[in-house]
Image (cartoon, rainbow, N blue to C red; front, side, top):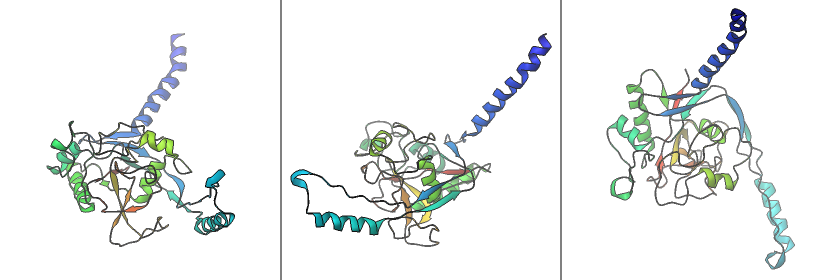
Length: 270
């Protein structure tokens, strides 16, 4: 009787055990204390732009010709976007790189928002004031410290795919306010706002984040990123931004303000 019960329960125990293994592989914490979330392959539409024209009533209404012109301009600006497929899984930082993590790797802290400029400890604040070359230097040093893995800056499409977390349309303003660090005087500790659907924090606001790609001098990305350029692409907006630019669709160029730029790291899955 006992043997029969064990025989019936064993597949259940194995299923639970194996499920635990799969779940554990979805996240990873390295020796520096950086947490990563596995991003699985998939597709998204990038560069979709569908402007609309509102028609307020009452005394604020404009002449009919004004609306006709606005609708014509909206149609001319319409962009259907293009499909981007992420065909390889990758891990991306659950949080932006913190000042404490930067110090562990680089031995210094270039951040402007530290010391007497911020009332609380900034160990868990995102590192700021980071140039693209600084970001590359961090990655190079991190790869030397942890030779078991390969680290790099995300591409723009990898960043946006992770930020969207399966969303098809642009993010609503109510969701931006719930998840993004905006309208402040300095960055705050990572992970204080609502994460996105895939468990990533501060993808919008707090600090701008570098990507690997060159900027194309356009409002939206191209299907094939340029192989050269003057600046690199920044994503995500910063603590001085507002809901208008705190969207995963924003395609910006560094170096911008400089003081409000940080980074998030990708760890390759194999």
